[in-house]
Image (cartoon, rainbow, N blue to C red; front, side):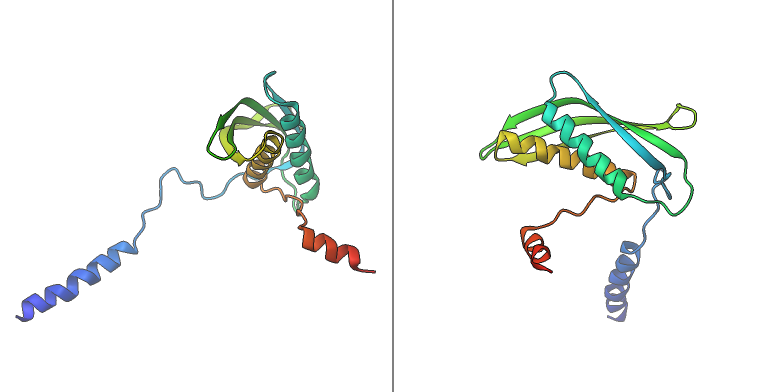
Length: 166
């Protein structure tokens, strides 16, 4: 009887100990390279909306301007290419997707330093709102990858409070 009760105690303890153990992933980066991004250039295929291109450019540039680095880092410029967009109707509104490629180019030498691609999607209730939401998703992703500070968007309540101050 004691052997059975011992098994009932040891088995859950072993499971708890093994559940807390995690092997590090081999291709997991410990520290991403950080760049001093000086500017961005947004391009796209001819079939991509001009509003999407312009809004993405404005948001990425605003994030670059809001970022200040306390140490010297390699100076770079981003080339953002929106290769294709698609809009699919859903029950309420539409789902917009975009494929984006970002190249990091060195300011000093003009050589490409890094390149990456990603896809973003946004749900919208109107066609005009879809490009704005998609541009915000693209800019948020770029800002996150390059540790840029997105300018804080003010809520209506915050704007009213700040405008009421003397």
